[in-house]
Length: 355
Image 1: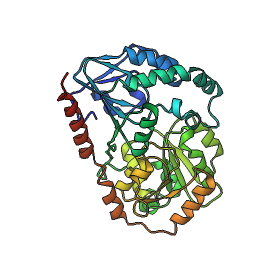
Image 2 (image 1 turned 180 degrees about the vertical axis):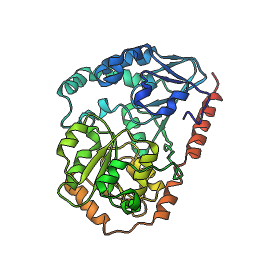
Image 3 (image 1 turned 120 degrees about the horizontal axis):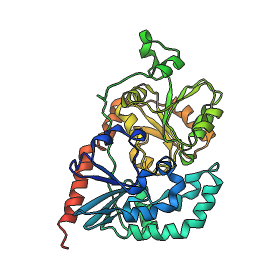
């Protein structure tokens, strides 16, 4: 979005330069006063009851505000039109059980239940302040309809990773695979890959269990509240890394046998990123993955996020052949140029409306 509108400032409630993508350091990021409170930046989920007030306090003087929202930005106040690009209606309100998971914080669950009516009223009022809604997938379009009775147009997010990105091996993964610098090509296809935030609804634990006690290798990339639990349960054929560079991630995509995804995903970006490198996906038959995976061409599905279903899918995968060129051709339709063009069309349409 920032590349589509390079002169547009970015308004947000919280921003920690050291904890997010470094590209934001070169952009005009404007934060709410609450951002001065380090404890809230670090433990933002604990401050959830405060955020409706914070969101309402953000005032933007612009002809059009493009709000990239999965819970709060659609509540920002503007003097002009509001175009909402919705990644999902707030998961903690409408999918609380899957968002927090079986092992989620009990206090958080009780707090959400106590605040649900207040938060839902605020959320719907904020949603109806929009002039137009865009959804990032077909499943999100349906959730918007159910939550807000609003019809949204689907505009798929783009894949921004390029195959030409600088590729850099990860020494600890190379060592774990038993390879060396002189034989680095031997790692090609030697492992499966998971790239995910480590949250309960991502179901990374089910994938880790599916690989337990097998001779298949699995690399898990990500960070989040579930990290320590996953480290405690994983077997030696599973390794975990985090805070890696784009070049290191590109190396993992380019050398994995396939990417696995078991999350209740709104869109499903990682199969597309792997597809740039001609690598197929094994994913949950759910949500956004139905938009981004062409079954039999760029990947295959399993029906439940359970270790048994995942292991069975990997068995089927190993008896199936995929064409890398066909996978790359499939991914081309999810380009940044197409995304930018559709955003500009939506913004220009709102500018042209009479006051």
